[in-house]
Image (cartoon, rainbow, N blue to C red; front, side):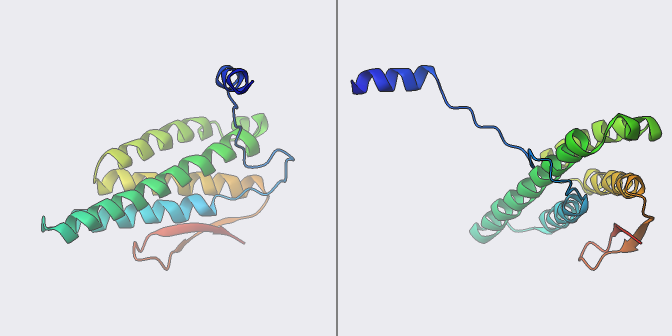
Amino acid sequence: MNKIIYLLASIFKENKAFAHCDIPCGVYDPHLAQVSAHTVIRMTKLLSELKNTDVKTNHDIARMTHVKEEHAEVIEKELETLRNDYFKEEHYRQYPNLQQLFIEIFKAVSKSRQNIDMDSSQNVLSKILEIAEIFYKTKGVTPVRVKSVYPTEGEIVIYK
């Protein structure tokens, strides 16, 4: 009997679906993507400053790379949610460059993951800020760029 169950289980594998929310909840915000972009920039900076090749340095490289990867993943997940769940056809008509921004940012995130390259990491943040500005405009509020309090000293987009 157990062999039959195992056989059926191997044939009919469970597929898990992941989504921000299937309700839909209406809670969307580019803030987490912005914070994660700053983290990617910070990890890129720290990685580029490492000099030694001792065990501790190798350990630090592994940890920083892991954090950089995790936050790049957050960026992709958050932006995919905005692109697929929040932004509608009318938004893409109103902001014709929006779809291209998403294409460019996903390419930039991929490049920033593959390299220790400050330019590509900064490019990720720049494009996220553009998307955040469009997002807040679609919500009927005024987007404002302000200096962040993060060690990156870059900007974030908030609204008033």
